[in-house]
Every structure is written in C-alpha cells, then in structure tokens.
Length: 258
Image (cartoon, rainbow, N blue to C red):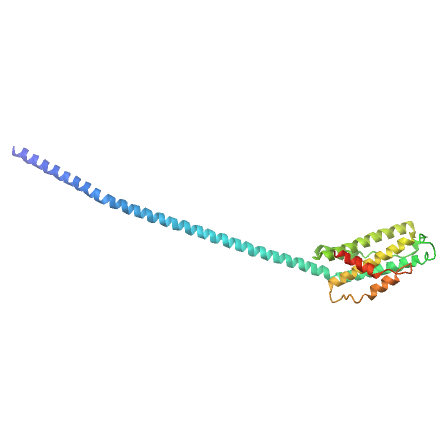
C-alpha cells in the first residue's frame, strides 16, 4: 500500500516538474521571441541598408565608368580629328609646293603656243576676217605639259580654297579644250582667222590664271602693281593689231571669286 502511495507521489511530482518546465518554456518563449523578432528585423533592416548602399555605390561606379569612357572617346576623337586635319594640311602644303613650277611650265607652254598662233596669223592679216590658213601642219606646236596638269589636278583634290580649286580646274579644262581644237586644226590642216585669235585669248587667260596660282602659293611673290609681263603679253599677243584689253581678263578672273 505504501509502495503504491510513494509511486503515486513520485508520478505526481514528476508531472508537476514537467509541467513547470513546460510552463517556464512557454513563458521564456513568449518573452524572448519578440526580442528575437525585433533583432531579426533590425538585422534585416541593416542588411537592406547595406544592399542599398552597395547598389548606390555600383551605380556611382557605373556612372564614373561611363563618364570616363565618354572622356576617352572624346579625347580619341579630338586626337583623330587633329591628326586628320594635320594630314590634310600637310597634303595641301605638299601639293601647293609644286604649283609654282607647274604654273611656270604651263605659262611657257602657253607663250610658245601664242607664238605659233601669231606666226599663222601673220599669213592672214591682210585678208578678210574669215580667211582660213591652210598650212597648219608646217608648224611645230609644243607638247601639252601633262606633268604640270597632273600637279594641278592633285592640288585640286587637296586644296581647301574653293576659289583656287576653281582656278585650277578651269586651267586644266582650258588646256584640254584648247588642245582638242589644235588637234582638229592639225588634222584638217587649216584654221580660221577667228580661231587663231580665240586660241591666243585662251592662252592669255591660262597665263593669267597661272599667276593667280603664284599668288596663292606664295603671297610674297604676287604684287598687283607688277602686271607688266601680263600687260605686255595681252597687248602684243594679238593678230588683229588692236591688242586685248587687260581689264577684261582681270574682270574675268575676278568673276571666278563671285
């Protein structure tokens, strides 16, 4: 009987002990969990803040990288542009350096051609204006200065002045058309009086344009008060005896600038 009572008391005490532990556990849980939740929320907030700063730092670094990239591209572009402009300027300077020699060759060609035209014109001066000279093949015409023309053509590609480009192009065009006409005269072995005078005037215009090239190539060379050579050529190189008005040629050249 006593054993049963002691066993019952032991079971009751054990049950009470377990109940107390469980109660204590619940009490502690109820008191500690809110604090743990608060701490967890605090850590979550700190982690979120850290992530936010990391994102902001990443965006800032990306912005710096973009700015640096743009700066590098601008520097490279500016450098490339300067190099290109320098190469263009050097090419123009190089081609311009040969222009005086080329212009001199063309002037010599034109003067020689004028002499031949005047020689042919002397045979028809005493006749009517439409008289045709029929012994063209007996004359020695100078060869076309192809090398000088090539230098003019090369300078046209590199020249930065639109006016000089037009002068160069007009000189080349005048030489080619004039040569085509002379080739026809030689083929037909005849040339009219008016054609002779027309070719002389074309040669004089070519000479005047070459002096414009001299002016452009070396500004110290040209002086508008020193037109004696052109004036002499314009006044003496004619088959009509009346000369050619210098001012007409000057006005024609000036019209190219407009």
